Image (tube, rainbow, N blue to C red; front, side, top):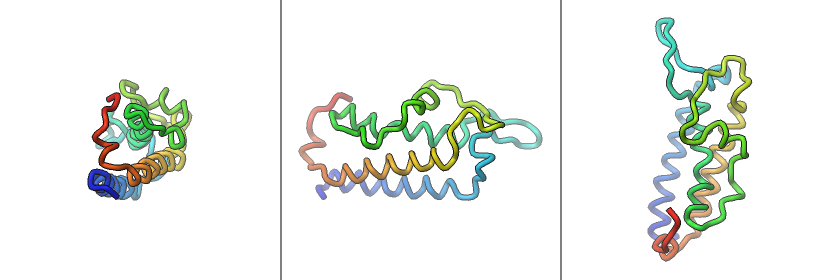
Length: 132
């Protein structure tokens, strides 16, 4: 693996490991819910929104760089739910967002596939002009 790819892969694998650890002990019925404290709802992005949002970017970054990331692209409805500017909504009855397992699988699989693709890239590929 060339040096640029190695640096990107090392950081990406560490990030992915941390992202997995952060999922520990989040029950599926709380995954798409706003947090609360002392009876007050805290309107902030919940794990479903965060992991769903981050699932759409690996293939988008590849496309912007002129590469094919279609094999690990998120389903189209992820863009409708999670793209930049979309509002994170509290999903009390589980009817808005995909399941925890679907979102986590998409997140992990898309990032792993992107990391695997990066492993085979040359330094010259990273030095080439891209559309970003």
